[in-house]
Amino acid sequence: RFSINSLPKSWRMKPFKLNVQLQGGEDIPHVPGAKYSGSIGISALLETKKEHQIGIAYNHAFVNPDDLDTLQKQGMSGDAQAFIIGTRRFADRYYLGTTLSFLEDQETTDEDIYFDGWGWEMFGSYNIRKKWWLVGGWNTLQPYRYETLAKNYRLRYGVLGLRYSFDHFRRMIYTEIRIDNSRNADDTAPGNVYTAGMRWDF
Image 1 (cartoon, rainbow, N blue to C red):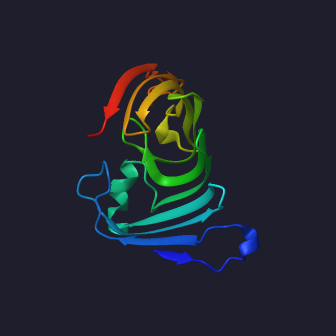
Image 2: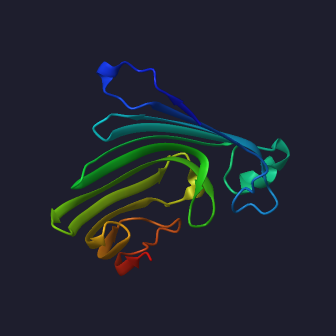
């Protein structure tokens, strides 16, 4: 992990952060007996002094060529790759963040079939009055059109909720609705989800 503090003061930026991670021998999910031969991940974060952040990340996991026959049955055509760019802005009364991702052999359908695709995620919260917070978000994950093994799979839903915070995120009660327009591989719909809960850290 590196922190670079040589940016001009006139830019009003915090130190630039760069992270590098190496990993080897991890199992490939949903493919019994198969392992990645190694992986490398790189991420960078640029942050202003007014609590605005922009980050990018890239991960590349290498597969063993001897496993390709088995992996192709699960939809994989080669190494797993993921590129993500995101930004967020926050203050005492609000938070807003979003990410955009491009993925190869990284995500799977509900039938555990790997595919290439793209995703977009957004989340926000706003302090409407004292300890009451309104929260909302959107999530989509879409295979590319040439991914025929993914069939009709897609992830696409929005979330709307209300939170009462006794102590920020440590102690709160909340209710949420997930309005779902997703599709399973067989074109069935998962359906909406209604949630009520609490979090209480001691």
